[in-house]
Amino acid sequence: MRWLAGLFLLATPAAAQFNEVPCENIDHLGASYTVCEVLATDDIQLFLRDDDGAILGSFSAVENHAGRTLTFAMNAGMYHDDRDPVGHYIEDGVEEMRVITSDGPGNFGLLPNGVLCIGDDVRVYETLAYVDAQPACDFATQSGPMLVIDGALHPRFIPDGTSKFIRNGVGTSADGTRAVFAISNEAVNFHDFATLFRDRIGLPDALYFDGKVSRMYATSINRSDFGWQLGPIVGVLDGATPSN
Image (cartoon, rainbow, N blue to C red):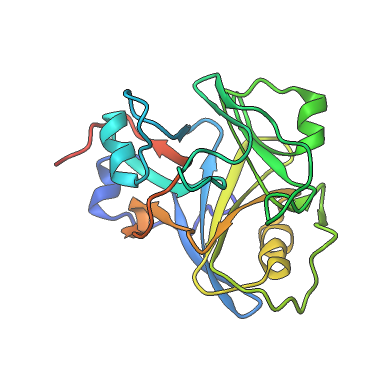
């Protein structure tokens, strides 16, 4: 049963046309978040480039490239100024960027970091565990830091941390059957964002995607954030073709 089951009994007219990803606004520790639950059986993919190798960069470009209705999307991993992924990246089984296991500057290098792997199931792995397991991923994106590792918060997080941003990330269930994507609707620190996944939603593993550039697209709540062009994007496709 979905964690969000029962919260979406009132369907919008659009919901009757295609299968939407259920999303909801919730409160946690005095801050508002939007959370969306995706099942491993949904058509979850990562998107970076078009057929000519140019970075897609936006939700509308992803939908146009796919030629199918995009029902949910979110920026999914850190990227360089040219929007190439900073860390490991696999799309349609093809590795574009290797796994980075060393520490370094910035949030990505705040070890432990991790990898979202999408295959027969959907899982967040701590990076070294991912290297050891060598799971079969049709899609994978590396980011950091990990928010929750096997039920424990990242050791560097403190409850009264003063660095606050709009943040987004993903957590996965222990059996790999579902993922919950979340974005804060106001500036929060790492500790509070991590406890959203562990304590409020009850997921054992969660990965930080980014701050400042965090964006979400979700047809079920008529949300389409705008801003800077993006690097890797995670999205869920429906079978229908988009209407223009």
